[in-house]
Length: 318
Image (cartoon, rainbow, N blue to C red; front, side, top):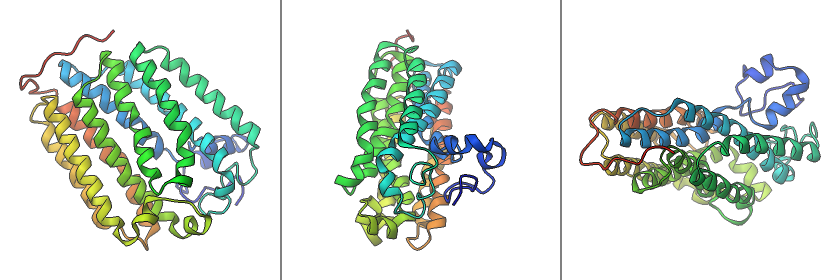
C-alpha cells in the first residue's frame, strides 16, 4: 500500500485521498482526518454535556462553546491517534488493517510523529485555556487517560472500557465549561457514554479478530468471542438506561423521550446485526454511531422545551 491509496477503514472517496496535496496526505492520515468518525465520537459527548447544561438552565447550548469543543476534538483526536500510532507501530505492522498507516509503513518517522503530536496538543491547549478553571482542570486530567490508553491492549482484555472513560470525558468538560460545576445528571451522561463506547468499540474490534489474536493484541471482542453480540446488546441497554436516568435527573422536558428512544432503537439494531464473520458490516455499524450520538444530542436539546419538573436552576456560566 502506498501513501496515495485509501486505508482499509477509510472510504474510497474520502476527501484526503481525493483533494489533499500528496505531500500532506500522510500527515492528515496520521491524524485520521481521512476517517472523521472518530472526531464525531469524541466531539459528541462534549456537545451533549454543553447541551445538558443549557437545557437545565433553560437556554440552548452556547454556539461559541460548541465551536471550541469541535476544534478541540479535531486537534486532540489527531494528537491521540498519532501518539497511539507511535506506541503501537510495531503491533500495527502485524495487522492488515493498520499496516499501511503512515508510521508503521515508514511514510512518517517517529520523530516527525512526536512533533505532530506536540503541535496538535499545543493548539488544543490554547483552546482549553480559554475555558474556566474547572474545565481546564478536567482537560489536564484527561491527559492521563489518553497517555495510558495505548498500553491497555497489552495488559487487559478491556481496552474498549478505557476508551470509554477517555472518549466521553468531554461530557464532563463541556458541562463544566458551561456551568463551572458538575452534578449527577452529567455523571449519569458520562456513565452512559462509557457503556456506549464499550459497545461500539467492541463492534470495531470485530474487524481484527484473527490479526489481533496472532499479534497478541487484547480486545473485548476476542475476550467475549461468540458472546460478543449479546454483550454489546447488554452494554447498549445500560447506555440507554443511563441516558434516560440523566434526562430524568436533569428534569428534561417530554420531547427528550422520543428522540432518546430513537437512540436506544439505533443501538439495539446495531447489536442485532452484529456478526463475527462480517468485518465489513461491523465497520459500517461502528460508523453509524455518529447518528446514534447525534440522536442523543438532539434528545437533550429537545428536552429544553417543557423542562422544569422541579429542577434547580444552575449558576450562570462564568
